[in-house]
Image 1 (cartoon, rainbow, N blue to C red):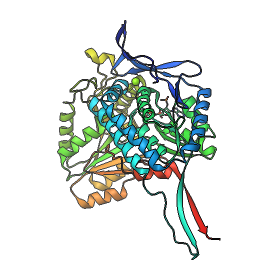
Image 2 (image 1 turned 90 degrees about the vertical axis):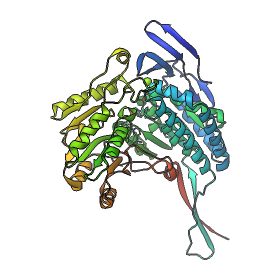
Image 3 (image 1 turned 45 degrees about the vertical axis):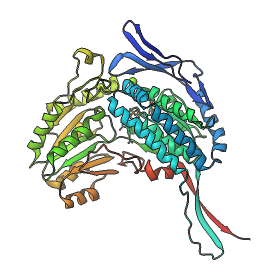
Image 4 (image 1 turned 180 degrees about the vertical axis):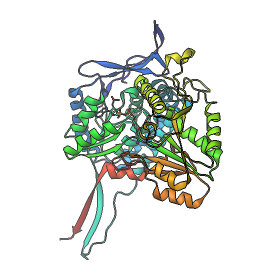
Length: 502
Ligand code: NAP
Ligand code: MG
């Protein structure tokens, strides 16, 4: 076990420690502290007096040990059958499933999303593990007819080797799992560098994997700053591939570092996802989906709806319904029953949200609802903001162009589908997009002309199914896809084999 303590409710004056843990790195099958012995803390954004745990502030030496451990272990791991590798993933799924309640609670305490959302995400982690466990038994190549009558030609795949996994804090269970599970089943060794904001939750996922019985060194876990450990993984010549999810600025740096040494990389980054509400939309459905897609998880999803592009014929009716329903949402601690929306993840995220709200006003949009820091009673201890709705937004404004990663909706009025699509495509991002319409021609035009990797019709922008490929266009990704049947493309390399009898 990598946890040091598990004590309950110690009152240290201002600081309330509900369950103080110090997690360790996992290197070569052992839970170890960093060489420097330094740690940093992860706090609860709903109550900043509460420390969720401490994680190792690792350095270059720790990283080197993790990489060497993975490189050594991968040599044997790749020789295992897919079935044997899958069997361990099935076991990991059962262990994670038995800990859903506990791990979801840690997630809510550590990064703020509501408990039902955290449970849903952890259950998704279980389903992802099972999906990829089954992959161990599926085909790995094709037979291609040769022009030589005496030859046999086929493709086969081999694992990349050592994969560095760099993940964000907003899905601290699902994202590490959807990257590590395929990497492992296809025969790679992994090194996970989780986001510091949610390191304790990610650690618990590693505990489940470790208990399932991966050979030592096949799975490694190392915490610390992004600029040292994340960058170090990206630069390391023995790390054959990097799979990254996070902001576009960091992603571009990671991609350049890996490219410059001839490695393989996959980047999933930001979004500025639009929903188009056409004149013939079911407005109640569109309002509910805008709220769910835009404000669940406090708007902190890469697929969150942030631009709401509404036909002028239904604009006022839509707007009134939206404001009415948003004003009923309860903001509060995600662990409390009845809280619909929790806090922003950190002080800096809260500052970003509040500064965009100011920018929206300065640039001439009208703040219709919310956008205030909430500081009444218990809320004063956390990073809470009320969901914001802006009216009179022009597509050129910052709040319509830049990723905010908070509960901010920008309403843009358009005349007809052509203008709606023009506005929707007026973005450097292209992750997810949705339309509400009952007209099949409009649906087909949207599917064809919208620049986004995920297209959703009469459904919120933030829905993703684990068995389907996931990824964005433009600056939302490195034009690669992950999850579902797409994962094999990144985590393996094709070999074309030509055999002729002698
Ligand atoms: P972030 O700041 O880019 O961090 C992502 C990860 O990169 C963290 O583990 C971070 O470590 C690490 N990192 C930081 N600096 C690094 C460097 N110089 N080199 C290598 N790694 C480095 O993103 P975030 O704030 O955690 O997550 C929010 C962002 O993720 C949003 O932009 C969101 O759109 C995006 N996201 C995208 C998807 C998608 O699939 N497209 C899904 C979810 C989230 P530290 O935590 O230690 O800094
Ligand atoms: Mg935290």
